[in-house]
Image (cartoon, rainbow, N blue to C red; front, top):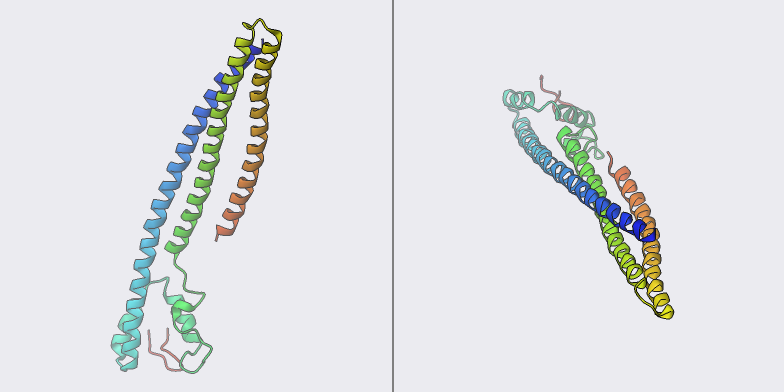
Length: 220
């Protein structure tokens, strides 16, 4: 009976090891896909920031030279996401208020949807990577279970062929030792997985997320 139970446990552990190996591969694939998308959105956000900086610089230069028509030309071409930041910055009267933000880019109103999406996907990638690592550990645990069950099955099997009672007891003791080691290892790894899961959850929660300058104004 014990040999049959051990054989069944070996088969079950082998199945579980294969299953969790597949699950970790899927999780790593999702993490990689999320990171690729995060990079794409980050590149888009960087390009949009460069456009905002370029048009703002040209607008300021035109305003400083009193080129009203050219200043209005650049201002009308501010991106929709950038306009609220410019309006909020102008409202602080930056030419007279020493506490005003240095540029519109330093105001809370300057927010890029592409940047937010990039951050969201990066957080998702980290969460999927944590899932993959947990699945790797599960697969490793079941592989170790196969080894220990096989060892216990081996020693239990040869013990029945040993005539000396003392030697038989030693061999059975070794087999029991492998089984005890497996149980202790399972308990320790389960505790470690719980700790890693709590840390991953905490990390995921942490991760996840006009007019002219001063008192003068050009018509928009």
